[in-house]
Image 1 (cartoon, each protein chain N blue to C red):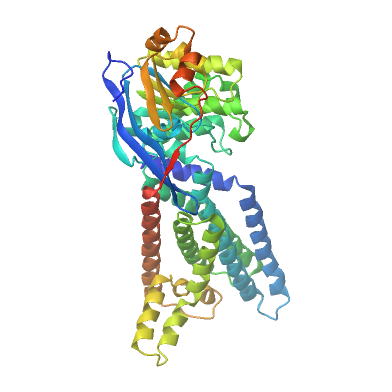
Image 2 (image 1 turned 180 degrees about the vertical axis):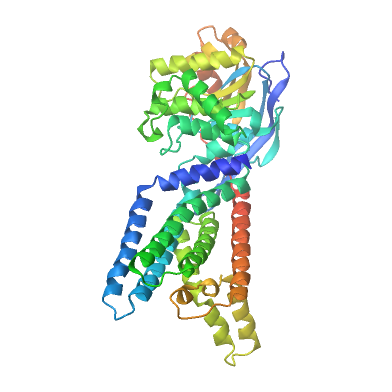
Amino acid sequence: MTQVAAIALNTFRETVRDRVLTVIALFALLMIVAGLWLGSISLEQGGRMMKDFGLVAVTAFGVIIAAFIAATLVRKEVEKRTVFVLFSKPVSRGGFVVGKFLGLAATLGVVVGGMGLFLFLMTLAVGGGASGMVLVATALIYLQVLTVVAVVVFFSTITSAILSSMLGLGVFVAGQLSHNVLSLSRIGAGAVTEAASWVVFVLIPNFSAVDVKAAAVGEQTVDWGAVALWGVYLVAYMTVALIGAAFVMRRKEF
Amino acid sequence: MTPITTSTPPLASLRAVTKTVVTGLRRRRVTILKGVDLTVGRGDVVGLVGPNGAGKTTTVKVLLGLMRPTTGEVDLAVEGLGDVGYLPENPYFYDYLSGREFLAFCGRLFGMGGRAAEERATELLADVGLTDAAGVHLRKYSKGMLQRIGIAQALVNDPQLVLLDEPMTGLDPIGRLEVKGIIQRLHDQGRTVLFNSHILADVEELCTGIAVMKAGRIVWAGTVERALAESPDGLEPFFMRVVGGDGASAPEATP
């Protein structure tokens, strides 16, 4: 455990000291502030507009940071040969993967959590009907972002950094739409198509099932039981992705 | 098996180790190690020498488990990697960490607690003459300073077996003297050291044993004393004779 914690702390240091992250995070905050301006020009919808725009910004920037930083986490260690230092010490390949994941998870916790808190405080400040739902929505965005990290870490053990990022973003977009695959299959497409749709539905993480942005702006009610169930599914999904990454790393030679 | 010395029990040994890798788009199979037999005795300081491409680095990586042997056996009479230190060739470390942070990080990888790792880092920084640069980020270190911090990280766990891949590379005369002092100190403490080098004078000065590699095989191994007895003019003519004059060798491709 000490080794995993050491790698996680080192990864946290690495990512928070990366200037690119600072620039992206500042830009994300600017976008949230821009939501204030959008709110001011919308008729009696200011608070709602700001929350809606802000939560979209939190999601977009969280996922972008996750996809691009996670892709380089493992690859950079291999390409710059720092893995020689790590794997010549009593560090397991699985511990390495988990440590890297936890380190980036901590960084993203700070970034996504910070953005969510900033949005919450802004809604409080402008009196746009601030609610704890903004924070709940942020927590569920964080869960989605972590799933993207696990997926990208897995891809980065078998392919290039840029392709891993693209695949991660692809999985995120597909995950927003995966429930549609199931809906389409029910329109009289036959048993085979329906079975295939189920396979696709299970393989692609269903991000839309834990997306409560609409509820946060007051447009929908939430079935919390279903959200909890899909949340557990996402945790299992990222666990499987990390086990896959550890398995690939175990087979690698340096 | 080729023992370096007969007076000490073996600490590390390779028996008939081969290593074949698949490389390039055409999936060409290249055999890097072609049956390496080598035994390093406890407390020995052994210089592994040979022309470029002879398989020295691969031999060390196989010993560490960074590469798996295709055939053959590897034995380390130590308690796993927790008792081994390793300096890679042309080391690159985390440039966003300071020297102190990096060494403390390495200490924690060996299971040390935070304070113990910090204290060990301080000790080692003094040992390699980097106390003044302890807080400086590694990206600002010169090549020689990186080499010294690399040696320090190889010693974090106070290992029984120290594997150094080209430890003198990039060092100025003062740095070389310091590294030689460290290797000598390790020898005095009874540690076992295996280091790859092209600098035969260093091997002659520091080592008790020498193993010469050529084209994936150990072609000569024994004590430095014996090598010098065979070649009183020094290790350079001895090396040229053993590797066959031009010293050129490259891994052979197999169909």
